[in-house]
Length: 212
Image (cartoon, rainbow, N blue to C red; front, side, top):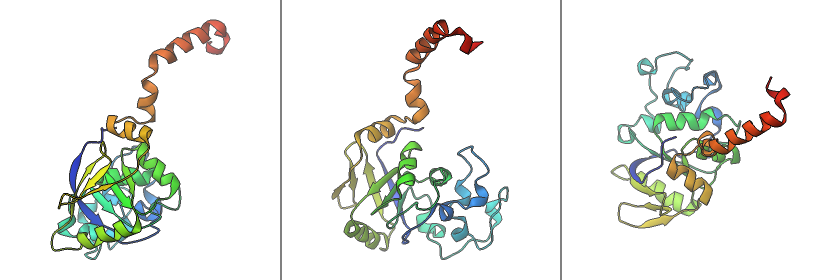
């Protein structure tokens, strides 16, 4: 998992509440567990005018001109601004995989579904909970003449607006440590590889029949 670094990115405003994981990545794309290749099918039923199927080249599909991610000003956006209860529905981990593969690093909302929220941290995404009032203000700024750019500083736990104003956010110390250092569950386990090997060697001496 890549370490999370301070960055400045464009905000894509998805003005919808209760966006479920089937909208984020539809069920027909769940056959792969490679974690990559899902970006072109992110929000598939909203981005395209036809029905997407696995293995179909998306570059030739008709785009929905009214969907936010298809607007030229939001191309390359790394920050998704959305409404309450984002990521509800099924617990599919493919949802954060698709968001990450598309290029998003941060999702800002007044609230998230619990399982999706946890899965984001495990896959290098930073979900930020802000008040409805602040989210409303960011939506207003994102609708301005120019696309809104924000700087996200995880170390300082701050979102910096173009005028220099900082908006603080909460994140648990353990999750913050993992994101800053690029540690997923496997990489956390591998930090204890010597202790694991010592335990396995001792266990093999104590109960050799388990290893035959």
